[in-house]
Image (cartoon, rainbow, N blue to C red):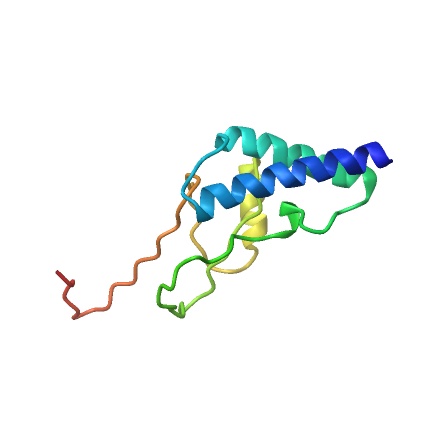
Length: 122
């Protein structure tokens, strides 16, 4: 069991360094594919062992905010998905709520609200 925990700690360290580099330092130390593979390996180790270590990226959503952008309140909830490779599961996730399901490339979500009668800012 100590071998599994050691391996989990190593993967957590690498994933956390990669996440910080990517989100906070605008630097990529591994590809998204490499990150996702390592992440999936960690998830599998956590399932096999029944142990989730402190600091595991499997327990975090998003990243540390490093900017002071103004905050906006959305009229409806902005929901996020766990990683999925099964598109058939998406309608079940949405349930009886109204929503728009669309493909998203890794990186950025933009929500644009157009208010009738407003003109765009230059």
